[in-house]
Image (cartoon, rainbow, N blue to C red; front, top):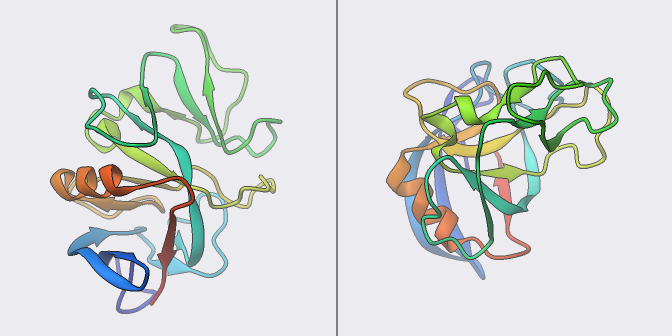
Amino acid sequence: MRAATTATTRAVVTLTSCGRRVGGPWRARVGRHGLSAHHHEGDGTTPLGTYPVGPTVYGLAPNPGVRLRYHRLVCGDWWDEDSRSPAYNTFRHVRCGRAPPFRGGSEALWRATVAYRYFAVIEYNRARVPGGGSGIFLHVDTGHATNGCVSLPRPELVRVLRWLRPGATISISV
């Protein structure tokens, strides 16, 4: 994924394998405050760098035919974005209707009916450094800049998700 500058909220995604283009280019959206090499929790930027894509694809809709593990979201599925939580920056399931034991800007994934129809985790801050940033996803475009994620129109996102294999990475650059 490449953006023209760090100040933009738009970028281009291209799929490559062994150094050659296999898909795209497609228009994408990034953080509402652009891109940053110093991303931190809640700053609205998309982190620059190369990151693994998580081993599980998530979504509210049925599996679109991905090769990675697929988890269909249900009530009570959260992304823990509370930097004081021992499970910071991880998927958590809490019994539906119960308040989660974590706070912060944690996301009730099942409630984001457009963005999280399908998404993959960009494994930024895998070490889970408190305040370092959490919940960076590759998800469905909602028509505006993201809070730090990368979004694509649904047809293109589904194509990318179907293409992903274990060990895939995403490079975010300018």
